[in-house]
Image (cartoon, rainbow, N blue to C red; front, side, top):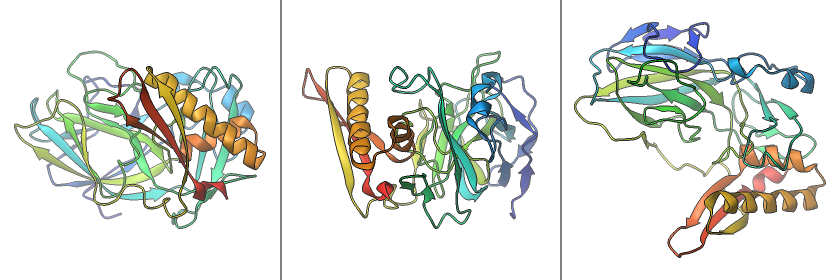
Length: 312
């Protein structure tokens, strides 16, 4: 890596707090190589078992590396982060965590899948005994500090970013975040090797990796929420074989989302023979929830797109 700066993974924190001292100060236009820890905070690893998941300490999850002070950034400005490279670790994990996820009531028991994948990202990651997932590394959690004092959980997304889990925060994308405090105080982590839109079971292919970013500053202009600008198409790495698509229809988007996903799980299980919880995790890393129609009252249409390329 040939960046202006490097931040090692031991320079991390849990939660957002504008009182945390920055570990680095950068000028707009400079590049930074950032080491990250996986979303478990290092509690899970390439040889992890279900027993490791069962004793997961949630006070240690979703660490982010930083903060980074952006010189000249003031409230009312925008920090722009361009993702220039991802250096993958070659392993990751996906889990069903009891009480968490879109279908938490359907899947009360813990489940864990540990992945081994090609660091060159040229081959899909195998989901034994069935399926494969095209790789698309991205940063799941990235944000600036809030103006409000005190410690704030890293779990929910916020106006200044955070746990966005937008899979298009990937190579070539520029993310724009509104500044609330001097220097912005940028931090990032929770890197993923792949994820479907919605991250329905609550986890993606959670994978530690090193990320190269360029940081810029836009003075005197900001949007009320994060914005992204991609450098090309967002789904053509998995489109070639088409999709299976299920729908949920009704007045409640959350219930319709659940209905669409449940149908897809049933469809996958009926044609593959894998367990429902395995289909649930596979949907989380490969399938996309979409609001297909939200104008024809009183019912809206939610669709779930699952790529045929993930079916092996």
